[in-house]
Image (cartoon, rainbow, N blue to C red; front, side, top):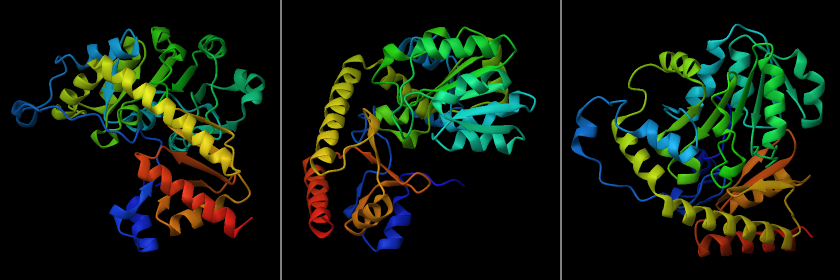
Length: 330
């Protein structure tokens, strides 16, 4: 299993701090979960039905012709490599590590590439995987650039896979409306923006034939009945979407300001997290953890990802910890 954020129980054991006493900023999740609606008893008692309106609600929310619900976008990440013969895959890196791992595990030759290298390598690739906005760097690529890459790949039967897990705040930049095109596959995460990662729900946006193959790979009843009910309610709550976008954007700007004021201006980020490259990454991660503040450490490039504090107490605690760090390590 690859290392991920959100491993709070591991931190509890390692540092001897009770779970309730942690400020967990290690995951790029909105820290304000959506209200849970009443779940009808039939959703628990019966097998899930695929004609209950969830697919239509997702298509409307994402602005896509078709949407396939899956038990978290991670399920699609692991299933997609099984729909092709092995070949060469490019992954725009650094990014969510499960992408490269899934293709490698299925026998593909994987090359992790930087943005400026894509044009050079693209014509030798069968699949290009891009996270947009990227996690953890926050890099954003234009729809025009991505569609150009898709066209070059599609001419040879290739795929462009775009993971839009952090796109909910900027729907106008999504490729969802173009997913009728053969060879364009967009992944959307439900749990991050809605703050409900535990329900395990995601969506794949693509043309009908590919979605049918993917549905067969994922299997029947993949998304639980209660999750389908919850998903529909959240996706239809337009007023709630506007409030969540405003709240996350304001919090993200506040986080940029806090980090910058403490001498650690971030190099990238989006509405749900900020990304900091620093030679002190491991030291700062340990310092914060000893005070019950959990960050996401990336050892390979000596960087940290900061999620959004959930309340004023969390903001004050993070600020005070930085001040203590700067006093001890000027």
